[in-house]
Image 1 (spheres, one colour):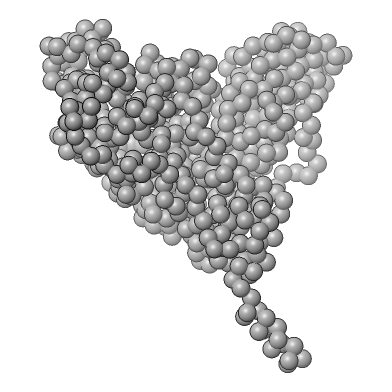
Image 2 (image 1 turned 90 degrees about the horizontal axis):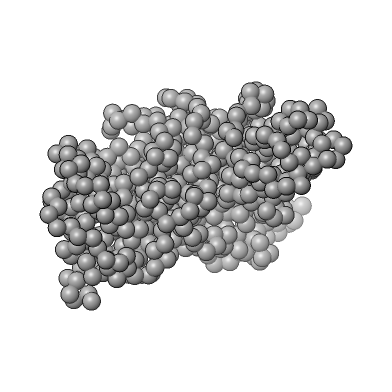
Length: 140
Length: 424
């Protein structure tokens, strides 16, 4: 299940890329760990290993997926992408959703963040419910 | 009015240095968290290395200490690991590029704290400390030897020590003096004439040499520096005193480091390195014509490494090899991207960059201030436009990261070489 680099995210990162020194994340960002997908097909929740998300270490997350109507989504193709919009670079690793854990939960392996600041993690979800993207903001 | 001015002047002049330092601190809660993240107190215990089950074996470390300093582990009998990794110079050599039996193409990297890394070498072409240790041994310009030569050395000189750690040595009877998958075509041809099973036996001895050296290197770590004492005092709310006092320049340099200069983006965490790979637009070396595309080729070598985490010589399960499994393997950001070394003890480690292209710290700050275009790929840098004063202040701060190394004292000098009989 290879991860693909999103052209949209790349464009956004390039547009936002600027002097690292002056960069501040937009104040209105939503950092919640439960989000609706871009066109509303899914709701997703990221569940890291602990309360805080560390930098510098590989992590396993659980991604909980359900339809807008609240039905758990167990069978889906999910790819992971992300990066730091202000720095113009992606994730330092190529994380993957490696298996379904049942009840709408999916194991995400290979998550890593190599510096503090504003990160964006994007899951592209494809299932019988349709294709959509879940985007999470993180402040590390 | 005049009297008030005089009194104020007297008060300023009589204020102790630590009080000035304290008054200038005013770190915000977010900055204090950043300082905490950089403190050596955050290092924690050494991470386990599941690919090397001898990593925490003290006998293996002692054996590795002997091997690290043994010049017989080279084609000429004149080069050991310690030839380039000088124990009294932070385990580096001060040269732009390493010099073993020939001239290398990369700067010798320091060793302290590297057991905390996921990737080794400037381009991360090894994924463990023991795989890294094996690379130079068969490199034609570093040690220049071959694994059969080394296995024969172990059998003839260190057999009892080896067997007490790793178990029985395989029979090496009838092997040629030199054979291995190296650049020398005669030695490589001799290697291919050896049966696959015996090649595997020899390679296992070779892998164990790397594991012993790694067990030794693993014990060379960072010790607290003046910076750490400053952070201790700051976080405890104590007035800095003694070794925790920063000069105004050092304190402003720290503020620049985590602020305007953004050094902390890549030089973060208690090792002052994010351990990943960045193209910072460093010019090609004038000392070598070897093409160098950094991580772009480094990651390919890591994935296909004969001694990688997923190899037959590793003690890890595939599950343990997550860094390799989830490594980014392609993309323009890998081109001429190199791993930032730790900045601890950086002021004593000129010249800088992956082939020593920048002779001094002022040269490094000039580079980051002007952010030249990358010769290949794309530099991540943007010009910082640092004033001369700001550069001096950042350098002053970097000086606070100097400390002795943390290691068993005997590991910081050459072992007393004795014959095996005497050492039993």
